[in-house]
Image 1 (cartoon, rainbow, N blue to C red):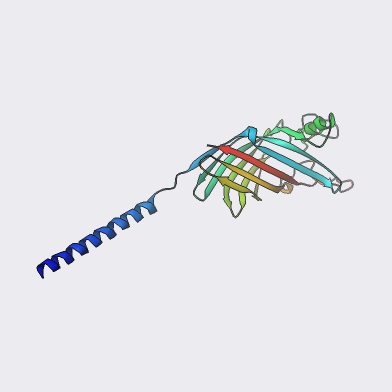
Image 2: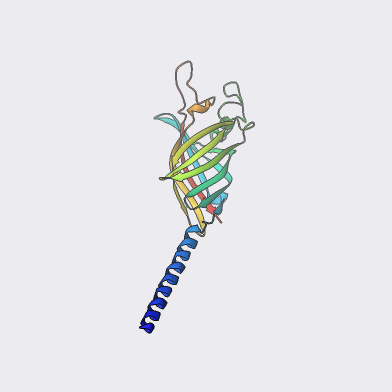
Amino acid sequence: MKKIATLMIASVALVAASCSSAEEEVSEDTNQEVEAVTYNLDGGASSLAWAANMGPDYGHEGTVGITEGTLTVKGDDVSGNFTIDMSTIKSTDLDEPKATYLSAHLQGTAPDEDHPVDMFFNVPMYPTVGVTVDGYSDGKLMLTLDIVGKELKQDVAAEMTSDENGASIKGDFSLDLTSLGIPGLQPNPEDGSQINPVIDFTLDAVLTK
């Protein structure tokens, strides 16, 4: 009987030790902090296209450069900062010299009596647009943009992927600039005509570790 009792006590001790060890492993795994991974923009491989219109039969298309940026992913938390160089605005739907003229017109670098320097994006005063990524959820990026010195918060549809090699952000979306009161995107007081302040974009951002 003593041998049986001893064996039973030993078995209970082993089970208890095993359970304790398992609990410690689970506890360690639960408390293990997720590592944050930061990716850097590959500007040469990234692109941002825009399209604006003044009606169903009139509009322009072009590109603008994303010059730098980082994206940090930590579990489900996503944050980042990007810089758009407004001096790189280009038209892709016009031939020269009209394409160059439109770019200067949008930048405010070739002012005339009809197009003052502060019309549209006034690049001499506001050379960049800052983009802050505040999060990513349900297929949408939560953005805060600094455009012509004013803040615009908007969620945009995008597909974001990341792995051990890099990350990407792709999407077709629109930004409504109405609240910014940008000169040139306001209704014409004479005839009510207006360039649509809702601008369409196609983003393809490539990032590497």
